[in-house]
Length: 185
Image (cartoon, rainbow, N blue to C red; front, side):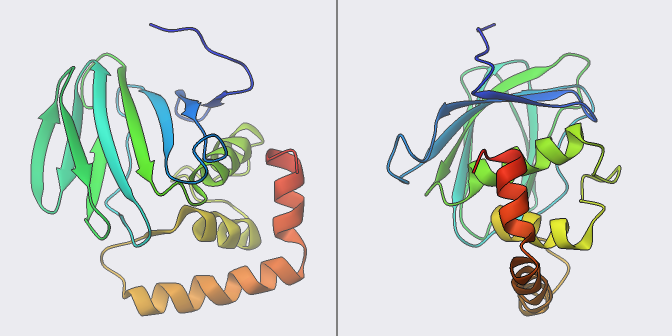
C-alpha cells in the first residue's frame, strides 16, 4: 500500500472508501485530475455518464468491475479502461477485498470539488444512504459540480431541473457556504 497525506486524502465513513489526490487540477492547470481510490467490497457507483470529461481507470491492487456502454469487464492489476465523454458506465467492487485504482479525469473541471463535497457531507451525516445530499440545495450544488447524469432521464430535463435549482442555491449563498465548509474557500 502507500502512505496517506491527511490534506490530500479524504474518506467516506458511510462506505469506507478513501480517495487520495495524486495530482490536482491546480497542479495540472486544469488539464487533468489524478486520484487514487481504495474501494471497499460492495462499493461502487450506479450507472451514470458525464458530458464534460472522460475517466480512465487503472487498477493497482485487487479487481475492479466495470460496466461501460453495456459491456461488463473486470480489471486486474495493470489493466485499464476509459469511459469517454457520454459513455454510460459504472464501477464496482464485488470481491471480498478492497480494490485500489487510479482514476484520471480529463479535463479536471470540478471533480475535486465534487469529491470533497460528497465525502465532506458524508462525514457530517448529510447524505442519504444512496449518496445523494439530504438538502435539496446541497444536492443542486452536488450535481452541478459532479457534472454527472442519469442514463434513463432526459438530459434536457436533468439540466433544466438541476440548473434551475443550482441558480437558486447560488442566490441563497449555499455554494459559498459549502465551499467554506468543505473546500477551505
